[in-house]
Length: 169
Image 1 (tube, rainbow, N blue to C red):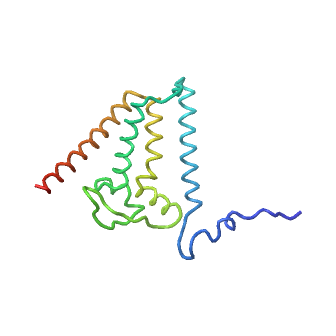
Image 2: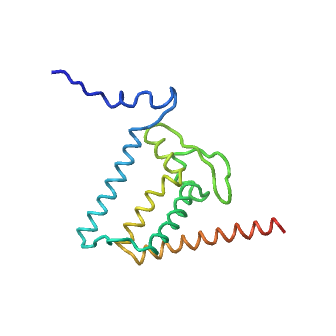
């Protein structure tokens, strides 16, 4: 009996232009790690007797949303967190207020992790899930931590507004 199944590498052949490495298997691995980790966290919450709310509170969504924005930018762009990204990225240039532009480097898993770490939009899924689990597992501590990042975000807005006002004066 002959197999008619197409090998996985043939299914994705031609996806990227020749010479451009798209680490699709590594992306799949990262997404599997995300899904398994989130499923594990949800199973642990259930086993501990903590149930998910039927409907998230609007205030928690706003709090977690703003905090997710700030934490994902801090991890993806901040100068001080560059040590986390350095094994997977290459410094390019300064970018904005306290931020850096970096380019992912390497191949396979290293490239995929580098692409995740320089993308605040990509990191936001991981950060938002962490806040969501935290709001069930330890709501007071999670709200406290999220509040720190919301306050920092508000401070950033005020710093930028103040600088813009100074520049116009």
